Image (cartoon, rainbow, N blue to C red; front, side):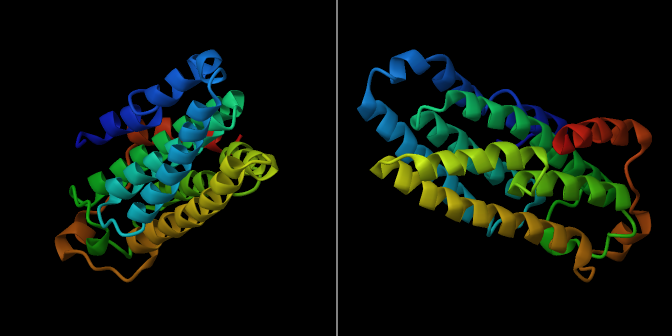
Length: 231
């Protein structure tokens, strides 16, 4: 699903792709009547979280890394539903909406500032040129990986704790794959930051000459979302 960055932010963060998780939560009374269905939901959620995380490790498109990250986080929400903790899944859905919208819109600012370049391999050396975008992506990434006391920590960590304390095969399976998926999340998040900002520049001279940070009308929504991602 390709689209303009604000559309990606809206669809990935809060509406289209999270509709399936929301539907499972709304139909929780039906799922609770079938332990087999819950088991399948938990296993598929954990497999999705891990598989999408591994795919995110090798993407070179800035927005695709974040898109596969969304898929991985949806896996976390789904396996929380499979373990019958629907409120925690919805809590993670709400938190994820904030920091994922922040990540997508910040990525849009980077792409805009580098004359529509999206390839991570053709970025780097922009830390001083795009300080605001860097700060916002850093906040979003820290929330995404579950850094202590940011929003992602309070929901993602609880999901892994729930899996650990569920005395069943599904609980054991989801906990281990969830931990592996969380490791993948940390790896590709900091890989993205390193390649886009910290690494030696590998972009065209004209891109660096015209690089500019987001104007205030693009930066203002990011500031609001960053508050949501922290608090």
